[in-house]
Length: 239
Image (cartoon, rainbow, N blue to C red; front, top):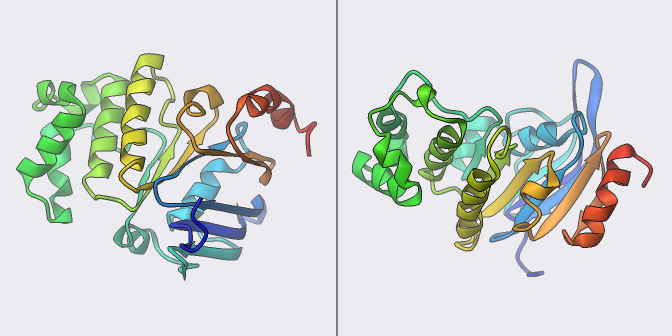
């Protein structure tokens, strides 16, 4: 792992919560260029809150947030997006009443033409070309997730944040989606993937971090030893 170059994304001793209730207790986490980090944990562990802090969507009550070594603590979601951070939230993140093509066209603010955006999307996911005129909300869940991912990648992100990409999808679709994520990481994009189900992402992750009750209880290689230990970690018997 590179030591001289700072991580593209770094959270240092982050605390955050809602209405006086702390959801994240001193989380420290980093993702380097070209690295896929899986953020795992049971429901309510603080995974999505951590990711929202990373994307500027939710403020940290304390701690530091850095992009490529620059302190950006308190950055807005718009500022984070301008800095190259792309969040694809749980629940697809598309406009269900627009067609596939119209959903893609909305990404022309990136400076790319409609043709460029469509071509990239259809090369990654050929099924979207067949659905180009279809109302996005009438597609299958997997196809909607392909569209959401295509929209996000139109921004050419430096950091890609994925929240529960596999939720409700068939294993073959999940494998296809994560295949694209792995390919993207090989181009140098830093990827942080929030998942509740470890089996969906561990095969392609470079590193795994496990959150339990808002604290990191594991940060290291996603090997078989982690798979065997996850049940204990989720139950809180390992500290």
